[in-house]
Image 1 (tube, rainbow, N blue to C red):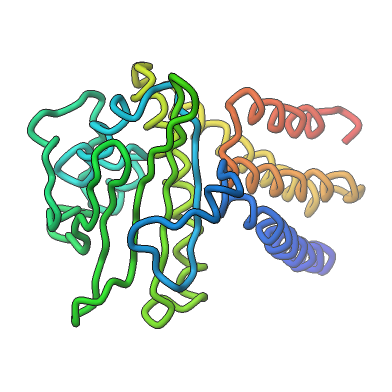
Image 2 (tube, helix red, strand yellow; image 1 turned 60 degrees about the vertical axis):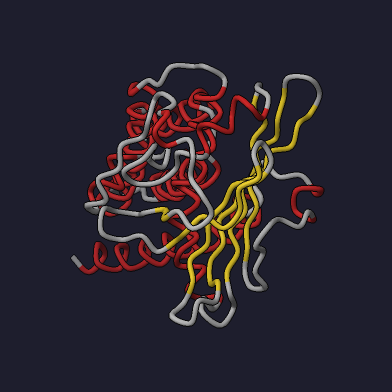
Length: 280
Protein backbone atom coordinates (compact mmCIF):
# COMPACT_ATOMS: atom_id res chain seq x y z
CA UNK A 1 0.00 0.00 0.00
CA UNK A 2 2.84 2.38 0.85
CA UNK A 3 4.45 1.71 -2.54
CA UNK A 4 1.19 2.37 -4.42
CA UNK A 5 0.61 5.59 -2.50
CA UNK A 6 4.14 6.74 -3.23
CA UNK A 7 3.70 5.93 -6.90
CA UNK A 8 0.35 7.73 -6.98
CA UNK A 9 1.83 11.00 -5.76
CA UNK A 10 4.84 10.57 -8.01
CA UNK A 11 2.55 9.98 -10.98
CA UNK A 12 0.46 13.02 -10.10
CA UNK A 13 3.58 15.17 -9.93
CA UNK A 14 4.82 13.83 -13.27
CA UNK A 15 1.40 14.45 -14.83
CA UNK A 16 1.34 18.03 -13.56
CA UNK A 17 4.89 18.63 -14.80
CA UNK A 18 4.17 17.09 -18.20
CA UNK A 19 0.98 19.08 -18.69
CA UNK A 20 2.56 22.33 -17.52
CA UNK A 21 5.67 22.05 -19.67
CA UNK A 22 3.73 20.64 -22.62
CA UNK A 23 1.19 23.45 -22.60
CA UNK A 24 3.93 26.05 -22.20
CA UNK A 25 5.60 24.71 -25.34
CA UNK A 26 2.38 24.49 -27.34
CA UNK A 27 0.97 27.85 -26.23
CA UNK A 28 3.00 30.02 -28.63
CA UNK A 29 1.89 27.74 -31.47
CA UNK A 30 -1.83 27.78 -30.78
CA UNK A 31 -1.93 31.53 -30.09
CA UNK A 32 -0.85 32.07 -33.70
CA UNK A 33 -2.23 28.86 -35.25
CA UNK A 34 -2.13 29.19 -39.04
CA UNK A 35 -1.15 32.85 -38.91
CA UNK A 36 1.73 34.31 -40.91
CA UNK A 37 4.03 37.08 -39.73
CA UNK A 38 2.00 39.50 -41.86
CA UNK A 39 -1.18 38.36 -40.10
CA UNK A 40 0.39 38.92 -36.70
CA UNK A 41 1.68 42.40 -37.55
CA UNK A 42 -1.45 43.60 -39.36
CA UNK A 43 -3.64 46.13 -37.56
CA UNK A 44 -7.27 45.03 -37.39
CA UNK A 45 -10.33 47.13 -36.51
CA UNK A 46 -10.89 47.52 -32.78
CA UNK A 47 -7.52 46.19 -31.66
CA UNK A 48 -7.12 46.63 -27.90
CA UNK A 49 -3.87 47.15 -26.02
CA UNK A 50 -3.75 44.05 -23.83
CA UNK A 51 -3.31 40.36 -24.56
CA UNK A 52 -4.29 39.10 -27.99
CA UNK A 53 -4.12 36.11 -30.28
CA UNK A 54 -4.34 35.82 -34.04
CA UNK A 55 -5.26 32.64 -35.93
CA UNK A 56 -5.87 31.99 -39.61
CA UNK A 57 -6.83 29.40 -42.18
CA UNK A 58 -6.52 29.26 -45.97
CA UNK A 59 -9.84 28.66 -47.70
CA UNK A 60 -10.34 27.56 -51.30
CA UNK A 61 -12.96 30.23 -51.95
CA UNK A 62 -13.24 33.94 -52.67
CA UNK A 63 -14.32 36.43 -49.95
CA UNK A 64 -17.82 36.68 -51.43
CA UNK A 65 -18.32 32.96 -50.73
CA UNK A 66 -17.06 33.19 -47.15
CA UNK A 67 -18.77 36.43 -46.11
CA UNK A 68 -22.36 35.05 -45.81
CA UNK A 69 -21.19 32.48 -43.28
CA UNK A 70 -19.51 35.12 -41.13
CA UNK A 71 -22.35 37.63 -40.90
CA UNK A 72 -24.81 35.07 -39.54
CA UNK A 73 -22.66 34.37 -36.48
CA UNK A 74 -24.26 34.23 -33.07
CA UNK A 75 -26.60 32.24 -30.87
CA UNK A 76 -30.09 32.20 -32.36
CA UNK A 77 -28.55 32.95 -35.77
CA UNK A 78 -26.00 30.78 -37.56
CA UNK A 79 -24.36 29.52 -34.37
CA UNK A 80 -20.64 29.45 -33.61
CA UNK A 81 -19.48 26.74 -36.07
CA UNK A 82 -17.78 24.84 -33.29
CA UNK A 83 -18.65 22.03 -30.88
CA UNK A 84 -22.37 22.65 -30.40
CA UNK A 85 -22.71 19.69 -28.03
CA UNK A 86 -20.10 21.17 -25.69
CA UNK A 87 -21.65 24.63 -25.75
CA UNK A 88 -25.08 23.16 -25.15
CA UNK A 89 -23.84 21.29 -22.07
CA UNK A 90 -23.51 24.80 -20.62
CA UNK A 91 -27.05 25.69 -21.67
CA UNK A 92 -26.16 28.01 -24.57
CA UNK A 93 -28.61 26.40 -27.03
CA UNK A 94 -26.27 26.73 -30.01
CA UNK A 95 -27.14 25.23 -33.40
CA UNK A 96 -24.55 25.69 -36.12
CA UNK A 97 -26.05 26.37 -39.54
CA UNK A 98 -25.22 24.12 -42.46
CA UNK A 99 -26.64 26.58 -44.96
CA UNK A 100 -26.78 30.31 -45.52
CA UNK A 101 -29.87 31.85 -43.89
CA UNK A 102 -31.16 34.94 -45.76
CA UNK A 103 -32.81 36.35 -42.63
CA UNK A 104 -29.41 36.71 -40.92
CA UNK A 105 -27.50 38.31 -43.78
CA UNK A 106 -27.98 41.95 -42.85
CA UNK A 107 -26.58 42.72 -39.40
CA UNK A 108 -25.91 46.36 -38.67
CA UNK A 109 -23.44 48.18 -36.47
CA UNK A 110 -24.83 47.64 -32.98
CA UNK A 111 -26.53 44.29 -33.73
CA UNK A 112 -26.16 42.08 -30.62
CA UNK A 113 -24.03 38.95 -30.91
CA UNK A 114 -25.32 36.55 -28.27
CA UNK A 115 -23.60 33.74 -26.38
CA UNK A 116 -26.92 32.34 -25.18
CA UNK A 117 -30.55 33.33 -25.36
CA UNK A 118 -30.19 35.59 -22.33
CA UNK A 119 -26.55 36.67 -22.58
CA UNK A 120 -25.60 39.12 -25.33
CA UNK A 121 -22.47 40.91 -24.15
CA UNK A 122 -21.23 42.01 -27.58
CA UNK A 123 -22.39 44.15 -30.49
CA UNK A 124 -21.22 44.38 -34.07
CA UNK A 125 -18.64 47.17 -34.26
CA UNK A 126 -17.25 46.77 -37.79
CA UNK A 127 -18.80 45.49 -41.00
CA UNK A 128 -17.06 46.17 -44.28
CA UNK A 129 -18.38 43.63 -46.81
CA UNK A 130 -15.88 41.01 -47.93
CA UNK A 131 -13.15 42.54 -45.75
CA UNK A 132 -13.97 43.03 -42.03
CA UNK A 133 -16.62 41.71 -39.69
CA UNK A 134 -16.40 41.81 -35.91
CA UNK A 135 -17.93 42.64 -32.55
CA UNK A 136 -16.96 44.12 -29.21
CA UNK A 137 -17.99 43.78 -25.59
CA UNK A 138 -17.92 46.91 -23.43
CA UNK A 139 -17.81 47.69 -19.73
CA UNK A 140 -20.43 49.67 -17.84
CA UNK A 141 -18.95 52.94 -19.07
CA UNK A 142 -19.15 51.82 -22.69
CA UNK A 143 -15.41 51.29 -23.13
CA UNK A 144 -14.43 48.25 -25.25
CA UNK A 145 -12.94 45.42 -23.21
CA UNK A 146 -12.93 42.57 -25.77
CA UNK A 147 -12.73 42.61 -29.55
CA UNK A 148 -13.40 39.69 -31.87
CA UNK A 149 -12.84 40.43 -35.56
CA UNK A 150 -12.53 38.53 -38.84
CA UNK A 151 -10.46 39.68 -41.78
CA UNK A 152 -10.66 38.31 -45.34
CA UNK A 153 -7.51 38.56 -47.47
CA UNK A 154 -7.55 37.18 -51.04
CA UNK A 155 -4.60 35.11 -52.19
CA UNK A 156 -4.57 34.49 -55.92
CA UNK A 157 -7.75 34.01 -57.90
CA UNK A 158 -9.60 31.45 -55.75
CA UNK A 159 -8.08 31.45 -52.27
CA UNK A 160 -8.66 33.61 -49.21
CA UNK A 161 -6.96 33.81 -45.85
CA UNK A 162 -9.54 34.02 -43.08
CA UNK A 163 -7.88 35.67 -40.10
CA UNK A 164 -9.46 35.94 -36.67
CA UNK A 165 -8.13 38.10 -33.85
CA UNK A 166 -9.21 38.48 -30.26
CA UNK A 167 -7.79 41.29 -28.13
CA UNK A 168 -8.46 42.48 -24.61
CA UNK A 169 -8.33 45.59 -22.49
CA UNK A 170 -5.46 45.01 -20.02
CA UNK A 171 -7.24 46.64 -17.07
CA UNK A 172 -10.45 44.66 -17.52
CA UNK A 173 -8.76 41.36 -18.47
CA UNK A 174 -5.40 40.92 -16.71
CA UNK A 175 -3.03 38.24 -18.08
CA UNK A 176 -4.13 35.60 -15.55
CA UNK A 177 -7.78 35.95 -16.62
CA UNK A 178 -6.84 35.79 -20.30
CA UNK A 179 -4.77 32.65 -19.66
CA UNK A 180 -7.79 30.97 -18.08
CA UNK A 181 -9.93 31.98 -21.07
CA UNK A 182 -7.52 30.96 -23.80
CA UNK A 183 -7.58 27.25 -22.94
CA UNK A 184 -11.25 26.61 -23.80
CA UNK A 185 -11.11 29.33 -26.46
CA UNK A 186 -8.46 27.59 -28.56
CA UNK A 187 -10.44 24.34 -28.59
CA UNK A 188 -13.59 26.08 -29.84
CA UNK A 189 -11.88 28.54 -32.20
CA UNK A 190 -9.80 26.01 -34.11
CA UNK A 191 -12.90 23.90 -34.68
CA UNK A 192 -14.71 27.07 -35.80
CA UNK A 193 -12.07 27.88 -38.41
CA UNK A 194 -12.12 24.32 -39.71
CA UNK A 195 -15.91 24.35 -39.97
CA UNK A 196 -15.96 27.71 -41.75
CA UNK A 197 -13.44 26.38 -44.26
CA UNK A 198 -15.61 23.34 -44.94
CA UNK A 199 -18.78 25.42 -45.29
CA UNK A 200 -17.23 28.00 -47.62
CA UNK A 201 -15.65 25.28 -49.78
CA UNK A 202 -19.03 23.62 -50.17
CA UNK A 203 -18.22 20.48 -48.24
CA UNK A 204 -21.24 19.05 -46.46
CA UNK A 205 -21.28 18.86 -42.69
CA UNK A 206 -20.67 15.42 -41.24
CA UNK A 207 -21.33 14.45 -37.66
CA UNK A 208 -18.92 11.56 -38.19
CA UNK A 209 -15.96 13.95 -38.29
CA UNK A 210 -16.82 15.46 -34.92
CA UNK A 211 -17.54 12.00 -33.52
CA UNK A 212 -14.12 10.82 -34.71
CA UNK A 213 -12.41 13.85 -33.13
CA UNK A 214 -14.09 13.16 -29.80
CA UNK A 215 -13.43 9.42 -29.99
CA UNK A 216 -9.72 9.86 -30.64
CA UNK A 217 -9.41 12.33 -27.78
CA UNK A 218 -11.17 9.91 -25.44
CA UNK A 219 -9.00 7.06 -26.73
CA UNK A 220 -5.87 9.02 -25.83
CA UNK A 221 -7.33 9.67 -22.37
CA UNK A 222 -8.16 5.98 -21.87
CA UNK A 223 -4.67 4.95 -22.97
CA UNK A 224 -3.10 7.40 -20.54
CA UNK A 225 -5.30 6.27 -17.64
CA UNK A 226 -4.59 2.62 -18.50
CA UNK A 227 -0.86 3.31 -18.43
CA UNK A 228 -1.29 5.15 -15.13
CA UNK A 229 -3.05 2.14 -13.64
CA UNK A 230 -0.27 -0.19 -14.81
CA UNK A 231 2.27 2.19 -13.31
CA UNK A 232 0.53 1.90 -9.95
CA UNK A 233 0.05 -1.87 -10.01
CA UNK A 234 2.93 -3.46 -11.95
CA UNK A 235 6.29 -4.25 -10.37
CA UNK A 236 7.99 -3.13 -13.59
CA UNK A 237 6.77 0.46 -13.61
CA UNK A 238 9.19 2.26 -15.92
CA UNK A 239 7.56 1.54 -19.28
CA UNK A 240 3.97 2.15 -18.06
CA UNK A 241 5.16 5.49 -16.71
CA UNK A 242 6.65 6.37 -20.09
CA UNK A 243 3.37 5.54 -21.85
CA UNK A 244 1.45 7.50 -19.22
CA UNK A 245 3.49 10.62 -19.98
CA UNK A 246 3.30 9.96 -23.73
CA UNK A 247 -0.49 9.71 -23.50
CA UNK A 248 -0.65 13.10 -21.80
CA UNK A 249 1.50 14.62 -24.55
CA UNK A 250 -0.82 13.17 -27.20
CA UNK A 251 -3.83 14.64 -25.38
CA UNK A 252 -2.17 18.06 -25.39
CA UNK A 253 -1.39 17.85 -29.10
CA UNK A 254 -4.90 16.73 -30.03
CA UNK A 255 -6.51 19.37 -27.81
CA UNK A 256 -4.50 22.46 -28.67
CA UNK A 257 -3.09 22.03 -32.19
CA UNK A 258 -6.12 20.57 -34.05
CA UNK A 259 -4.21 17.92 -35.94
CA UNK A 260 -5.70 16.13 -38.98
CA UNK A 261 -7.70 13.04 -38.08
CA UNK A 262 -5.22 10.67 -39.70
CA UNK A 263 -2.37 12.12 -37.64
CA UNK A 264 -4.39 11.88 -34.45
CA UNK A 265 -4.94 8.23 -35.22
CA UNK A 266 -1.23 7.69 -35.83
CA UNK A 267 -0.45 9.18 -32.44
CA UNK A 268 -3.10 7.26 -30.52
CA UNK A 269 -2.57 3.81 -32.07
CA UNK A 270 1.00 3.28 -30.75
CA UNK A 271 -0.20 4.01 -27.23
CA UNK A 272 -2.57 1.06 -27.31
CA UNK A 273 -0.13 -1.12 -29.22
CA UNK A 274 2.55 -0.53 -26.62
CA UNK A 275 0.21 -1.05 -23.70
CA UNK A 276 -1.18 -4.28 -25.16
CA UNK A 277 2.25 -5.73 -25.85
CA UNK A 278 2.53 -8.88 -23.78
CA UNK A 279 5.91 -7.95 -22.31
CA UNK A 280 4.61 -4.75 -20.78
